Length: 341
Image (cartoon, rainbow, N blue to C red; front, side, top):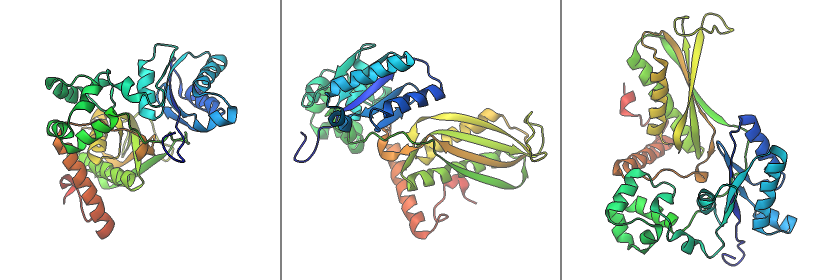
């Protein structure tokens, strides 16, 4: 027990050792959902399961429940899997990463600190190459060395916000719930230009504006997006072989996964502009743009990469302040400088 009236959670992370189509992946999630409804997709070939309620219903141990799911995957789809079992999502994912193919790595309650202590700092989610290089320069190679370090020292190395997040992860803390799979969701924003436009600078400005609108909506609804889709509608056939059913206006579409799930407008804008560049419009006569954010998930269900750049924290603080101003004074109260008239 974690405390009075609080049940110990049992979370499993499964790696599926197969190349799966979208349909196969959906079928597997449905199969596992027959054992427990608390199943979260981790594309392209993993999933997380909260077994806590199922254990009482099926009267079995957490380890036996994991083996049952693995046997169902093998029996119904001939898919081998490895798994991690722990008290929260982060530890379960780390245990699965440490598991040999086909095996199950278990981090029992009360042993998380001992299990984490000897592992490399790079095993923690959010520790990228830049942060790892900084930690290594100061002799910090293992998770145990992080937890033994005085908080003030780590703050001097990383900054207060990043140090606090890293310390929580190094101690094995992760409050995120497993979010059951839901039908695909998306947010979209569109912009019809006042006239057919040839100007690349205006194309860029339009896409930046759509990315900013999508970011505001995501933050307002506490959602993260994992993928962006940009559709460009043209005034002629010069840039597409496909003619729309509505007449002479045609379009092309590009989709790209975001580096990580996010609601941060600059990150959305960078990917959206990458999509725009990939289209090679040059002298295209553009009539409208549509930007869609796909594969949405609750903001509290995803980690974001830790950053060594203090400008990232400042940008997020400015973004939060701008959102507050918009809520109070209207959506046009604050605009990015790139979109200023």
